[in-house]
Amino acid sequence: MKPTPWGELPVSDAHVHFFSHNFLSMLAAQAGRAAGEVLETLGWQPPAQDPTAFAHAWARELDRHGVSRASLIASLPGDEASAAAAVSEFPNRFSGYFIANPLAPDAPARAARAFGELGLQGLCLFPAMQGYSLHDPRARALVEIAASHPNTLVFVHCGVLSVGVRKKLGLPSPFDMRYSNPIDVHALALAHPELPFVVPHFGAGYFREALMVADLCPNVYLDTSSSNNWRKYLEHPMSMAQVFTRALAVCGPERLLFGTDSSFFPRGWNSAVFDEQVQALATAGVTAEAARAIFGGNLDRLLARPA
Image (cartoon, rainbow, N blue to C red; front, side):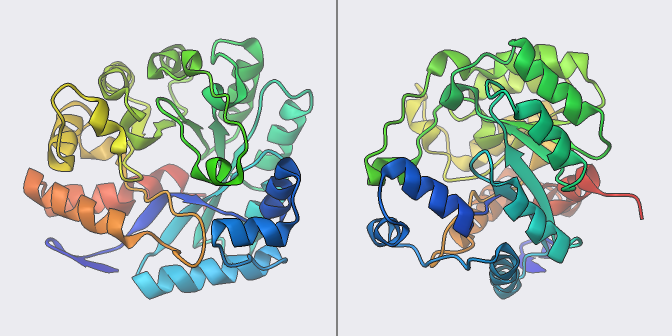
């Protein structure tokens, strides 16, 4: 529970990257460096080799901040088992997401295993990063796999994509912005009206377009995570309170999911994002009921599993 202007609230974080030991090893291989050198460059604490032990580290970190639950993202294709180990260890604490590249030949099999055997609940698509259109039949096939499993969602990164880790390691980031418009989510959301689609960072620069799709499709949700620095691109910059006011007018409080975009240690859970968004929502004048929904109730409802 977290103290807020509305009293103590249970908080569920919809956006935490699970930078596991396996993730670190894959990242180091991409950079052509030893894992220890990568850690030194990034200034990270080494994650435990056992993903279950790393899950315990995250559980202790959330306890320290009074956070009830979190969605953990396996942040490179091929690291699904790490997030699954965390979920298996703390099934009432964590939900697991995984990134899939529809262009990879084994993507359908990996997605089916992730949702089935591994018990993960979120498919993460990064079209600009991996260079495909959401209209590609291979992307649609992965969404259909998600739709065939109950209590799942599809997370689609849109807008500006900047990966600080890659920049620090000197890795190229040839992201193709042609594939980053939330408008492309529209057809998929219409085709699968029972499947929730989550657009993080309020569309990351495509705020207007994200709101348009959310207005047309009641199964589209906005994730509030990160510092939301995309606001600097607006002709008339908005405060976070103004962003929330506009989003609430279109989506209502039932389709906003609080998240931090936390990722590495020693920083751990990024409480500064929580503090800023509490202040913004208080300034926007939301009710205690709305705050309870945004800061955890909505995510818990979407990912609730049958008893």
